[in-house]
Amino acid sequence: MGPDQLNPGTAQATSAGACVAVKPETGMRGFVDGAWWPRSVSPTTEFTALLTALAATRGPMTRLAYNLAAWEPAPRKLRIEGHQVRLEGFHTLDQHTVSLTDPSGHRMVLLVIPADTTELRGNAVLTRASEPDNLATPHDLLADAPNSVPAVAPQPTEASPEARWETDGGHLLAVR
Image (cartoon, rainbow, N blue to C red; front, side, top):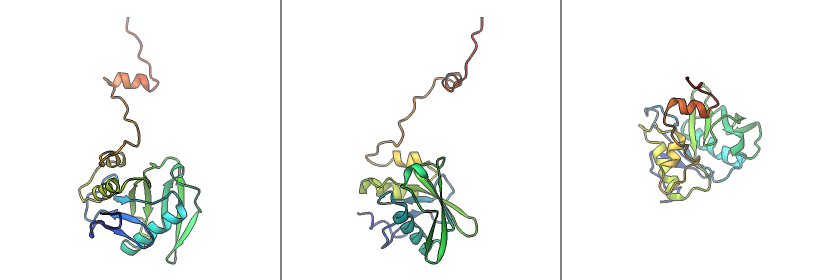
């Protein structure tokens, strides 16, 4: 099953090339409201395809926030089907998410599946992220996919809170 052949009620693939899966509106709120699988890091091409796909199913968006390090330089605004969408880049936003806002102020966060992801893994992540009861973090969604390599190397678990404090720059005084 290719990226354009996903489960019909969960995901849609548009002629513009966006492959996006969104939780039903009655689904549980979690870290993400669905997933999006762009084919490149070109924001003009990929953001246009995503916004066009969402306009057809969820209505127009007014704002799209993204991580600056994850994408090539982007314009400040895009016009999608007669509506202007403000693009805002941040260094602090998770590299694996985009945040979209509709005209009423409702915010939707989508997991961004890396463009070079295999079809098997990409389809699995799209499906899992759009499940109504999914509460997994972006990192967990990408790490739990078949044949996955974690996006960030796992940190060793400290034995105690004191040990964690020591590694964060704190210092325990020796009791004599």
